Length: 225
Image (cartoon, rainbow, N blue to C red; front, side, top):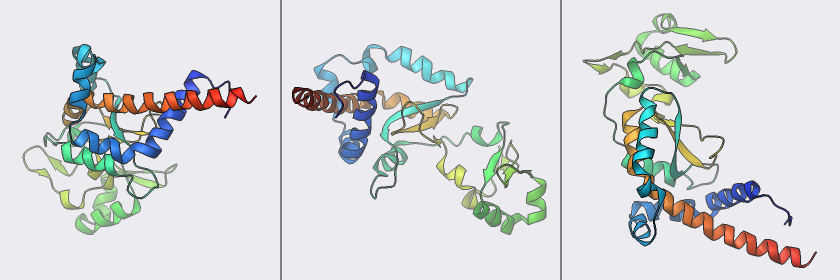
């Protein structure tokens, strides 16, 4: 182990190790509400700066950005979807339709999406509702979504695109690559981000323990240099 590891390198390594070793236990700690006792034991920014955090989260209604959640992202390992599972347990869609009727760049349809929806509405009609992206070599459904009606809802809900079934989950942020991320535009996602602010204390406790061990191992390494 290099003896001159920078602080940023240490933090990155600690978060990676935490994701590898604690992805299941930390999810269960959060499910059981163990952050509550930790918050009683010491001051934490999720309490001290709660209003500030809420104001920042609420900016998502007007400013596009993603929010990292204190839940581990899924990777190639079996069972690594514990964080995704807890997300869907707690997420409560408000069925507001904002993700459907708001104008946007369009919704990518993979081959299975296209064939499945075309089987319902016909390929000719579906192509007319899409544009073809040559770079992606895929059809992109125009937004606002032509299959959404504010009174009737989604007319293809049971065969909706895969992206829709995953929303508001987005790919992890570059600065937090091991955590789930959500679209701050979604009201229900913003509500969940607020409700889980206290969960970060569990992540931070795990990071602190691993950082202590990393420093200890680094000091042992240096002593042999």
